[in-house]
Image (cartoon, rainbow, N blue to C red):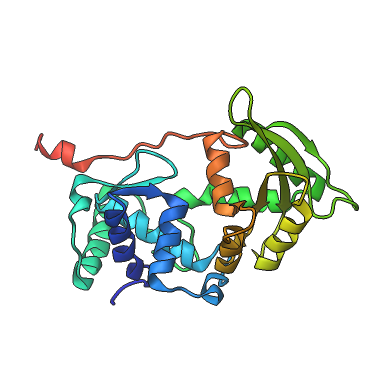
Length: 281
């Protein structure tokens, strides 16, 4: 296919959203695209200069161009949703390249008075939506271990977990904290959690070790990481016949910080709608 490498993800993102009924949470859509294309763990471990997954960055660029082409809307953070045009759109490889060139041409027309910018190197550049995500994860990864545990406590409190206690220490056996999830006025669950301030991946043995540590200490387990979980780790977390463990990776962590406005301020950005002014010519 002609053009930047990220163009190969345009159709998988589009068709994944179409098969989902037109919308999906960002992390779920990206995982579905990765599964659909059979992307390997070694490919997922490749990073760009800022440490972000190269594959995930490319998928984000595909979404960005679908948005600029009017096939995805940008109305709700954390959700990728097709427009009416995108719901039934079919794209050949030639159509994808035309979409790419069309978006680039429209951007140039919108900013005629500005000096010409060098085209971004898509393989090393985060999209506009990702810039704060990369910065947020970098800040969290550089916190001390105790600071990350306190931050996780704050997040879980915002989510609605009660009576949270940080238990991390030399004798914690892999349990960094515990709390209570109230299901209703009379029923509650004890939850234990582990905080992994990782840049690398979390493997199945980490999940198994945590499950062993939580036996007799909680009905529900949660692992929070600034990195990501391998496919095998996700399978282990939901393996039949054992206590399921909830997983929050770096991408999901960013979504939760956005949702609860923790350390982030929303910014309104205006874009010119050229189509509106054409009716006055």
